[in-house]
View 1 (cartoon, one colour):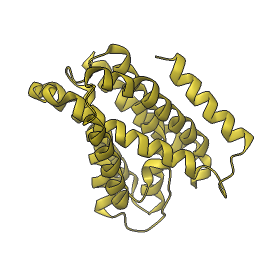
View 2 (cartoon, helix red, strand yellow):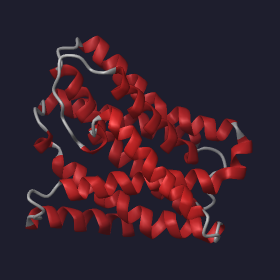
View 3 (cartoon, helix red, strand yellow):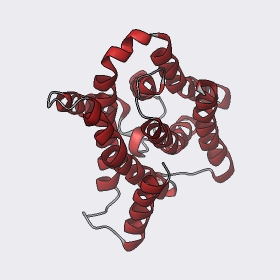
Length: 232
């Protein structure tokens, strides 16, 4: 099962690369609807599956602190990544090292609960995996597009994309390898939920222009939420 999950995670990044090569998106509008769908799915998965599962196994109020910590960690990571996680294009000739580092840390952290026994419930595990898969594809599109538009040659661009693709499987493997982390499984899961809540709400709020939602965007949000309810 671990191997299959790793293959899924790598394929999700590969799908993003294929979309870039075929459709050659030039700005964030080309993938905004996909991001909105993934944001709605992440938010719905968090409140319907992950949070209830977390508090079922850790009913103490203190676990909320770790959700808040995850939220704050994502704010810090986005300070360096410039918001690539939720579809921001920042075309520039030089890609700061901090962008790759923050994205890789984000991908690594969200993969840890997938490994070993860190997620108690099978449906919650599937919900977490599906949420990560749906979010990694559009992020990969933005990241590879950013690399190519900066003038980076394709070999180097795909090398960095491959490094990014390896991070979540590495997090998964770390969760499996260091079985003692299972002691802190609820705290780790809470941090990931906090990260998901920040990413998903940022995507949903930033998708509206002048704080107005079009009927089309609302429909995509509803579809993403319904998909989260019935797909797990």
